[in-house]
Image (cartoon, rainbow, N blue to C red; front, top):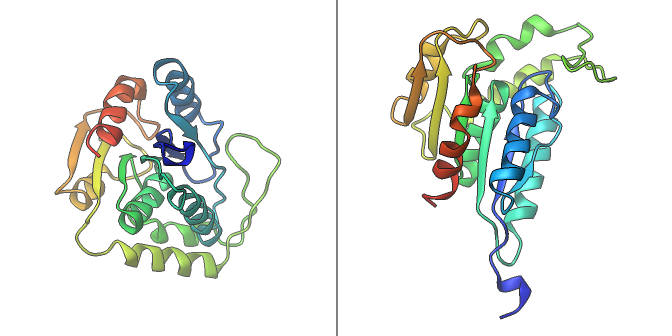
Length: 207
């Protein structure tokens, strides 16, 4: 059997939140844990701009390249906040399993508040962005892609103490999916590391 016929290593694609980066605490924490506990799994955390069109094009190109390989790997998605929304769009397009952590459900609603502002990543990186009405329109189009019943396989991790997003919206949106809803907590999802192994089991042991 040729090398190309062997199954590729599984890939976990981590999608960070709005104005966050791959340097975020949860992303770095999961990357370090995965390298120690599951070195057979490739960790991929692309940098996502707040421009939704550019972000979804980048992610679609990334997944297309992975899935077009002769022996396509298993791919699982983990998305936090806005990354949870993007993971859901990709989960529907590609029928991939996804774990969404305090996800944004209707991001087009809050994007107009950022129009005309110069935006900088929370991580302090030397980047700046300015959103336009076109970005809002693109986000609405992406929301339209997932407006119907979900066909993918999702696990919602949410904490009711989220000060940024209303967890009840996520509960309703993912109502027919696996859910873990905790009292207290915050938008960062406190003690996320408790779920690392369960996330791997959900993403890769059921495919």
